[in-house]
Image (cartoon, rainbow, N blue to C red; front, side, top):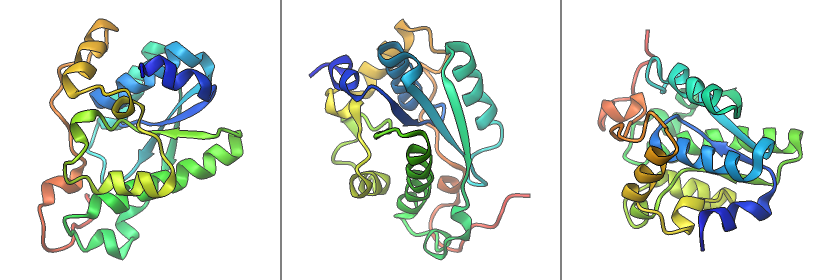
Length: 183
């Protein structure tokens, strides 16, 4: 199934949006298909690398996509703070809970995130959080690989089309002692 065919019946969506190539491409695809029915949601989080929220906001402004920012506090979650290999599960879970609350407020029935077909089968704890909460992955559902996503992003003029995969600040901590709050 093509991405457009997957998105069209949804009519209105919240896109979990970091500003990376996958989520940015999904956001632009949703905006192209659904117009004002596409809303990006970004976590304002201490685990988000400095300057990334501003970069993400630039893209939504450039493409005229509504952008909501929610404050997340995954560092307050003891399971996240253990800094175990599955910490991304708790980070995504925190974001998706906030997105569910926003979806209820806005009467939006679909929450999406930028998993692509290459991510399937990898160790992706965040994907488990998405499955548990009924969050959709249209890029993966359409069979789009990372190369496909980059090609679409380039065609649509997204400046992040060739950006390396980005990790949240917590990914740089490795495993072991709990991360401290950034200063």
